[in-house]
Image (cartoon, rainbow, N blue to C red; front, side):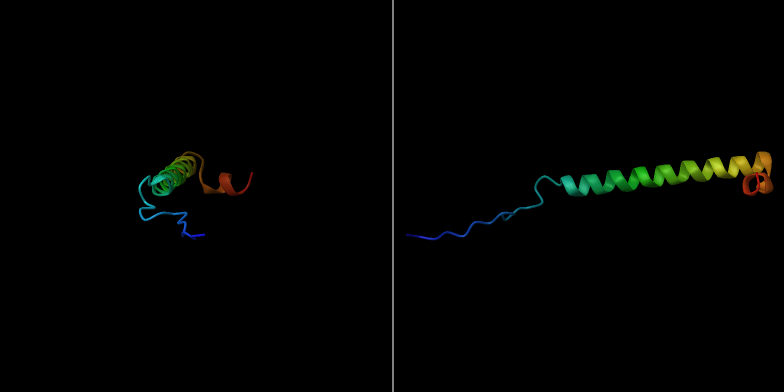
Length: 56
């Protein structure tokens, strides 16, 4: 009986690139969310002042 080695990942494991695409999309969404929160915060502070944000 002949034993053959089986490669799970294969020689070209980066063919689909799904992990890289997911990483780029998740980082982009995280940056977009953080920027929107920062813009909201600065607009709120300009309109109402920092005291109203800290003490309600």
